[in-house]
Image 1 (cartoon, helix red, strand yellow):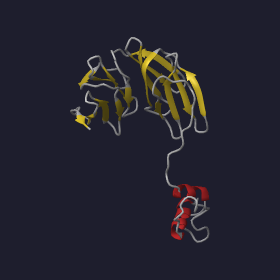
Image 2 (cartoon, rainbow, N blue to C red):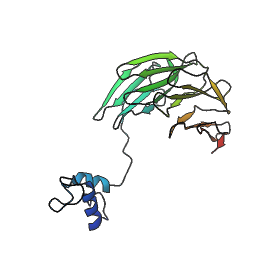
Image 3 (tube, rainbow, N blue to C red):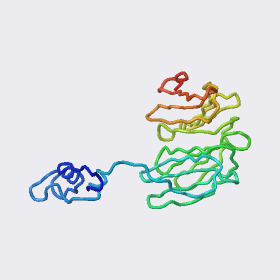
Image 4 (tube, one colour):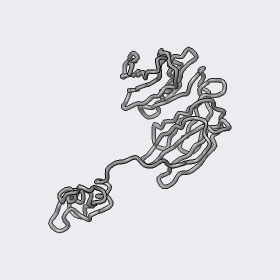
Length: 238
């Protein structure tokens, strides 16, 4: 435990061992088994300072930034565009990296990826006709490509604030931000959210019916726009 924390005190070591012990009797401390069976590795991990890993080379020959999503604990799905303009998939299954898997397509921007439920993935790219395309994993097979239209000059991003809900964002030829969403039954039209953007958007949801979107403006500043559940905000210069 000293290797995890060079300043370890007796009380800190005792608390780490107690808090990570496996109960074998009544919950909590008891007369015969104390806190339970001690688990030194678990105690060590609670004391070890958090730190970034080194860089791990996952291979591939990629011409786009990556996208990633997760549909379960210890599961990662990553996507890139290869030199043949197809989308490729590599995934961590909890014990090892798998892939690369060629998912086809002819992509000029993207990808973006999100998961709204267990064993579900939705990916988006921009095709050679500048339209947004959608490909999804339904738990057993890949589906698509689905042409969702639009005329997009930068990459796409997507987020989800509920099961079977998707919110996708692109920059149109007017340099404005456009929004298209799946409500569980059908796709909406394109909603013009304004702005004058010189980058692809980034989107995230931190709760039901909440969306935060970010772009770079013509002054190279970061701008923020959000949906609060009832309406879109103005643009906030960050």
